[in-house]
Length: 164
Image 1 (cartoon, rainbow, N blue to C red):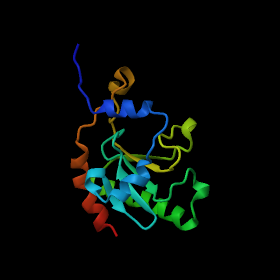
Image 2 (cartoon, rainbow, N blue to C red):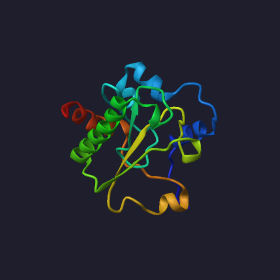
Image 3 (tube, rainbow, N blue to C red):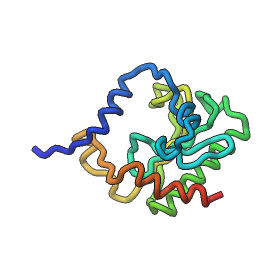
């Protein structure tokens, strides 16, 4: 039997078992002001864009408001507009850098809907390519990510800054 070692997944598994997070990452990481370490590729007026630490695919981004809100109704119109403009910026930068064939864009509101951090809503932007699926997620419950997160960050971040 062959083994695919992915020890970085253990952090995700252990975090997923923790039913109560003491610190909201979407509040704490932007305050830290260490964007590359925290994978924040862009900061706007009301929202920021961050690489998902546990991506479904290379380039998996999340656009989140700075405001700690659980759902869309809690956002002011300016925040809601900036959220969607942030999603548009994300797809534009990903298209230029990674040339995906399509995107999955989604919002999970509430734990039952799959929100890993239900108290702070955010939008997932997942680039997709023809043939990016294989047997690994189905048979082994494992997703192979072919690139380190900081390499993806270094490719994307300049495009977010240039795309103003």
